[in-house]
Amino acid sequence: MLIGVPAETLAGETRVAVTPETVKKLVASGHTVRVQSGAGVAASATDAAYQAAGAEIADQAGAFSADMVLKVRTPTEAETALLKPGAVVIGMLNPFDAAGLQRLAAAGVTGFALEAAPRTTRAQSMDVLSSQANIAGYKAVMIAADKYQRFFPMLMTAAGTVKAARVVILGVGVAGLQAIATAKRLGAVIEASDVRPSVKEQIESLGGKFIDVPYETQEEKTRPKASAATRGQCPRAGSADSRPRSPSAWRWPTWSSAPRSFRGAPRRPSSPRTWSSP
Image 1 (cartoon, helix red, strand yellow):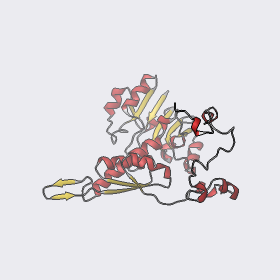
Image 2 (cartoon, rainbow, N blue to C red):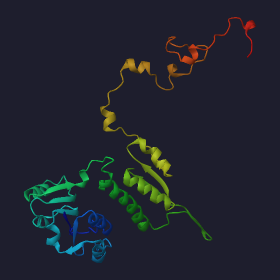
Image 3 (cartoon, rainbow, N blue to C red):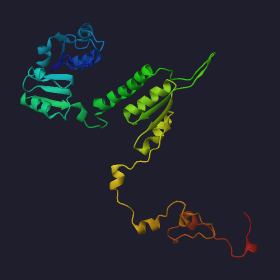
């Protein structure tokens, strides 16, 4: 199959869809890879590196005329006109952009939006959302450290001690967890918050402190409330019914519900005078 890798034309986009390492794997599988000249320069991948990996260097029209086109961003209107009917386009195609999808459909091509790929074990290598969010969390902390006018770690010098910076991270998803780990490695004091209380253990495992903000999620709002009978069966903590009872006042509800170890245990004689020690 002929695979084309055009250059990205969106302002500020420095990524490239295929690296020289990936080209080696595709060529070894019997495919022909055609890379647009200068497509990987912004990503530190020269044309010579692609040629050494077995790729062909072509112009923009040659890259878009392939059977399969690999892109980072969705093709523009001018780029869509260069696609041949029946071609396959793979990349971050922004599936919520109705105009862009209609443009691809009118061109007679098949598009695979990697943002919409199911997040399963088999498709984990195609999960562009997690991989790019991981990088975004790292980059966010690095930008913050550059803009911060003091130091992130605690520094002890002859002139005195500089306290460590306090970093607050809101949202502990893939990007947030990477941001916590990066800021911790830089020596900052981390505090993080999320609407999901379940991430508390993840934050603390990375050395951060969880900021507990009471919040009721939509799932909790729509969850059916417990009835009065159910509340009676499950008393709240601290109520009179939930206090621990003494062993003498406690009884098994029925003999059949008692553990087997209790059923088979020998009974103690009624008279203490006949009881013998083991």
